[in-house]
Each structure stands twice: as C-alpha cells, then as structure tokens.
Length: 466
Ligand code: C2O
Ligand code: CU
Image (cartoon, rainbow, N blue to C red):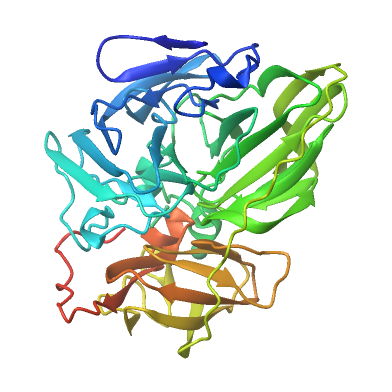
C-alpha cells in the first residue's frame, strides 16, 4: 500500500510519484478506491461508516510554484486543498475554521444539498475571520465535485482556495486506478498575485493566468503505468475564467461522466473543453506502450504539457468495463424562460447583467419545487460566459455534443444555449457566471424554488452575494 499517514490528526499525504497504483491483486482493494494526484486527502475522523467527518481551515500560506515561494490562501495548507472522499448517501460533516483576515464561506459546487449548507452568503451570513462553521449534509449524488469560497471568490479562489471532492455511488465501475486532475491557471507578476479588476481586459474577460497549474504545480504531472490498464480520471477546471482546451494522445480516451455523474453512453474523445467550474470524467485505456500526453492551450495555438505518463509495454489485454445502466431524467418542460446576458459601462468600469440587472436583489425567477423549466441563455455580446446554477442539475438541449447532467454550461459570444433545468431542490439558489470577475461585477442573481411542503424561503441574508 502506498498510503503513508503524515501527522496525527488531519492530513493524509499520498505518494503519487512514479509508482503504479493498485497494481496488486484485486483482493487487496482498499475500502476506498484510491485517488491519485491530489497532494492531500482529508482524513475521516468519524468511525461510523455512514458519516465522513473532516476538518478544514483556510489560512494565508506560502506555497511553492515553479520553484518560487508565492503567498496564497489555502485549505489545510495546500493548493489545491484536501480531497474529500465520500459515498452517495453518507452524511458529510465539515468543521471549518476561517483563519483568513476576511470573511469567507465554502460552497460545495454541484452538490444538491440544503440551501443553508451551500455557502451562499445570500442565505447564511459568511464566516468571519477567526470564526468557525460546521457544514453538515447528506450527499445526494455520485460524481466529481469541488469546493471553493463564495465571498470575493474572484480573489479567494484565484489565491488558492479550491479543492476536489469525490462521491462514489453503487453504480460506479471499478477501475485499475482513479486520478483527480485539478486544472487552474494563475497570474503571477514577479511572484505576486496582482490586485483584482484593475484593467478593462480583466473586467471584460475575467482574469487569465500566465501559467497553468495542475494539482497546484506548474510542472506537468508525470507517472508511469503499464499497458493494458483502464483508469478513471476526474477533471475539474478551477480557473477564474479560462476555458481549458485539452488534447490527449497515446491512449484511448472516452468521456464517462459530466458535472452530474456517469453518462448513459460514454463517448470517445481526443480533445476536451472544460469551462470554469465544469467537471468531466474520462476513462483512459492504455492500449499501447509509449507516452500518454495531455496538453492545454495556454494561448491560441500554444500548447503546454499538463501530463506526461509513461506506458510500459505489457501483453495484458485491457478489460472492457461493463457499463451500468444509467437513467437521466426524462421530463417535459413545465415552462420556458429567457436569461439575457449583457454589459453596460458604469462608473467603476463594466457592469455585467442578467435580464438587465446587475447584482440583482430580487430573484431572477421563482419556481415551484419539482418544476422543469427550459431556460434560454441568450448571450447578446462577445465574451463567453460559463453559466452556473446552484443546487440543481440541467441538461443542454439541442446539442448532441453535450450530453449528461450539468450544473455549468458555456454560453459562447453572441450565442443562445438552451438548458432544461430540474428544480427539485427547494430554497434560494445562486445563478451566476462562473467567470468569477463577471459574477463580482454583477452577473449574479438568485433563483428561488418554493418548497412543496408549503414552508417559506427566507428573504436574502445580509451577506453580499458574490
Ligand atoms: Cu463554483 Cu457559485 O460556484
Ligand atoms: Cu460571464
């Protein structure tokens, strides 16, 4: 076993260097599938097999990037923060302490949990410096998720507060290994993160970094594996703004999952585009010896290596993964709405608007729990917008290239995208652009879903909703 316990309480570090995970016989399979890649795993402090209880602290911390010390913000001292592992139906308890000098929250991106636990400062006031908050909820869906703050997110996420979360379900096929690839970019000016929103470019397109990070490091991820293996790679784009365009070579890849879990029908790819906030699960089969590479487009036409794996020759034949039967919701729409996206000049620069309002105080829409609504996202201007709805899943309509359940979808410039959204989770929910600068500049609203049991959704909390 390659797992080493480091320290007594919180952290488990896994050695993820050159070795091949899970190469022993299957009978030695651990209770948790191992997930390779993240530098830290949040240790479950609760002996109850149905409860996962972890401790997180956000602090200012110095991390090494490209060999240089950089002052950042981190969960439990690492960027990305610790991977949280949980099973569908488990209760997750997170004891969080805010060790920053500013307020913060944790948002569990993609999880359809109760609104009071979602980290929205519009529902529950943020956690002040030095204070603690316990997040506690039952995890409803399997898949690949992540967590990050929802206060001044354009600054706090950029500075390093983001981390992966894996939820296993009973349907999940068993792989030879699982890896989590947390993709980000960072803008460093002489080893320092420049202050936000100081130029028109950033207001217009969000902050693009000048360096790509994969699992927090600027160097490509590198490991070796043998021919004939089938692995599951979970990818998240944690960048403030950049859509990650990836290309893969040297093995067979197919997309097996999206934001909302496994796909009924996986599809083969050699390119993948992830907008800010999105996840994709990719199955990789090493059907030949040689190099497996993944590259990301840093600037148009300039490809940078994200991952270089060495596949050692073997005569093992890759097994075929028996695919579980997955049913996506199949519901007709109860109604139609449009969200028009535009921008106007304001004294502070640019204001980004949803249906003509920036920083809306009134809900964008109010629906009843259980309603299915077709929403047309109408981007009337040039810059693209990854649109994200909290607490619900949707499917992209009229686009066969984007199957599966999602919580975030890219709306390219001057384009309409139609989503069928299943409003099954009552409460007050943020709906916003996942270009965090756009959200900060106004592209943020609530959607209220009124509970079927007749109870009321409380008015917005005083916390400012970014
Ligand atoms: Cu990942 Cu409201 O955000
Ligand atoms: Cu936007």
